[in-house]
Each structure stands twice: as C-alpha cells, then as structure tokens.
Length: 189
Image 1 (cartoon, one colour):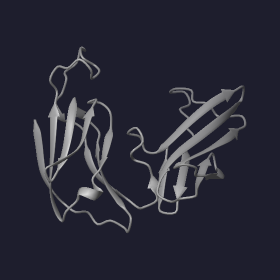
Image 2: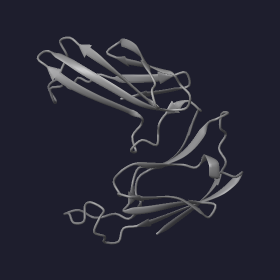
Image 3: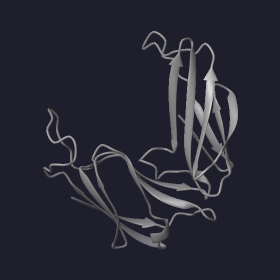
Image 4: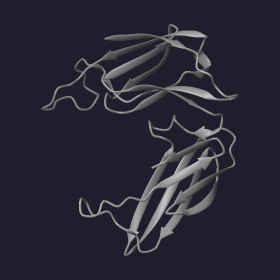
C-alpha cells in the first residue's frame, strides 16, 4: 500500500535536524520525499528513522510504500498471528538541535546501558552516541553524575553501584534510570 501526506517544513534551530520515526511498517518500507527515495527498511517490527532535513522544501509530499508480501528474508516468515500490513504503529516527526543524541544508530535513542551484577554490587556501563560537535556528555546513574569525553561521536563511562537494589518481578519491580545530557538535548532510559 501507499501512504501519501502533505508535510510543511518544520521550524529548526540553526544546525538542527528533522527526522521521521517509524515504529512499525510491515514488512518492507520505502520512504520518498518530494519524489526522491530516501531509504528502504526491511523489518516490519523494528523502529527506524530517516533524516529528511536536507530534502525539505517549504511544502513537501511524503510518500511511504509498505509491502507485506511473502518474502524469504524478513523475520518472521510464519507465525500463529496476523501479519499486518501498512503503517500499523506511530510515525513521528522529530526535530533536534545541532548537538543531539544520535537517532541514526540502529533505530535506538542513542543510549545503551549494560549492567553486570557482581555479588551485591553492579557495574553499569553507559554508552551514548552523539551527533554534532559536543566534546563531553554528562551521564547520571543513581544520582551519581560523571562527565564522559566524546571520541568519534561516542562517549562511554562506567558506574559502580554498591548494594544494588535488584529487580524482583511483581514483588519489587525496582528500576534505576540512566540519563545523558548535552547542553540542548537529554535522554533517559
């Protein structure tokens, strides 16, 4: 099927970027802006984004082609549920400042947290991917803040949480939050 929509140019800060975020397009999607193909995404259940900034005009025509025909390379091929077609989850227009957490990295929000439990303690590694000329990122976990140096658009820091409060399902669903901040952008997970 084909989805067609008129789209006005969003207001952007100097150096800012505009992305379209697709949260579900089954199974193979192609995105066109003003007649130009910007991307092809194979994987109906995975979020993907496309940077439309350099292709924007004052008035735009957005066209999305979505194909849920049988294929031999997009998982899953068979299941005991209905295979939806088209855009079956939200599509969002996202604008970000020049310095922002990368929306181009693997469909994620630009932050990755890896905890390793060691006895009663937890070693928590936080990685972030940054777009723009930022030199450092402020990362906070459990009210402990650190400055992480950005090298090749990536920053990484490690936290040690003594006597970590572990998740225990419905009995004690405790969560920690990791936050990363740039002067004009912030993300949490």
